[in-house]
Length: 81
Figure 1 (cartoon, rainbow, N blue to C red):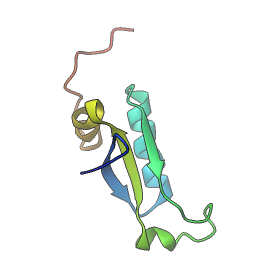
Figure 2 (cartoon, rainbow, N blue to C red):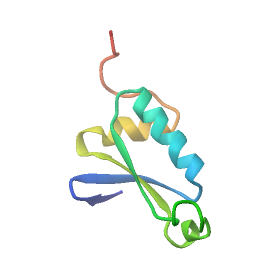
Figure 3 (cartoon, rainbow, N blue to C red):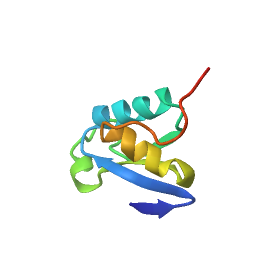
Figure 4 (spheres, one colour):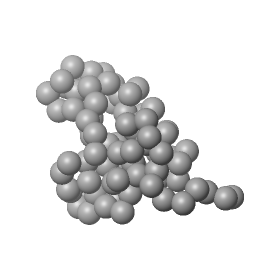
């Protein structure tokens, strides 16, 4: 796990669709995330092999985000909204 500008890279992906799915899972559970990657807007997908797509979250969300993406549940209290 690497830190960059207050964000922590929690997972890398070789395909954009996988990164977007992980981002959606986090978003559905109230965790803000950002995808960092460049494949020339999809025109050069082979660039993902050289520079994987990275998924980053804030420090306070790292544990919950990793747990969710690994198929677990977040450690915080359940959402009662």
